[in-house]
Amino acid sequence: LAKTTQPISMDSYEGQEVNITCSHNNIATNDYITWYQQFPSQGPRFIIQGYKTKVTNEVASLFIPADRKSSTLSLPRVSLSDTAVYYCLVDPQDNYGQNFVFGPGTRLSVLP
Amino acid sequence: SQTIHQWPATLVQPVGSPLSLECTVEGTSNPNLYWYRQAAGRGLQLLFYSVGIGQISSEVPQNLSASRPQDRQFILSSKKLLLSDSGFYLCAWSHTDLPQHFGDGTRLSIL
Image 1 (spheres, rainbow over the protein chains, first blue to last red):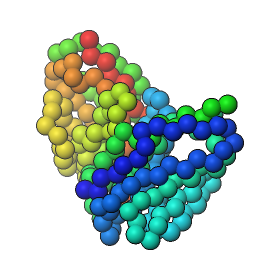
Image 2 (cartoon, helix red, strand yellow):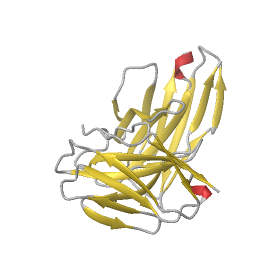
Image 3 (cartoon, rainbow over the protein chains, first blue to last red):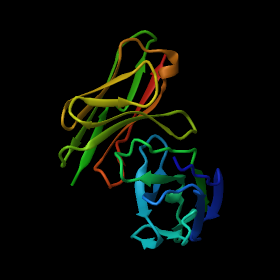
């Protein structure tokens, strides 16, 4: 199983762009990179998923370099409501997801 | 669109009592279903997953069991709760090759 490493916590201010980097040195060829957001007392919410290069949706961008050993979640112009824990996962999509490993995630605090 | 429901949202149970948590999914068929537990300030630990009715796989030895009596229903049970069973329990669904989607969880406190 590919292990991920991400910062335990980050602080930012409203309106800034936030970049959270995740390392996954042992990523396999079939693995996708998936990011989730979790608020207190709620289940994780899917944010974005990618395989290589850049993926963008209405809430975030995901940058994956050619070697795929890391990825960066980019949140544009964060607001107070973006304060949450963000999880990076390596997702072996050729199985049933039973090998999901959620680490402690990155606790993002957005300050006014 | 697909939705996932978990209940109850919170539960306080005495040690030694039984447990039944229910999860249902709407708007899809034959989903993969999962039960996770999350300790305070920690990541999620996969407890059980199911790829079909009556098919349950356990990831860790424990005091809990799971059942899938219907295609879109997943139940987490215990005959006798322990203090260590306290935590935040999350149900999730997915289809192969797609991300998992989580319910809002049940916070279980054992007294």
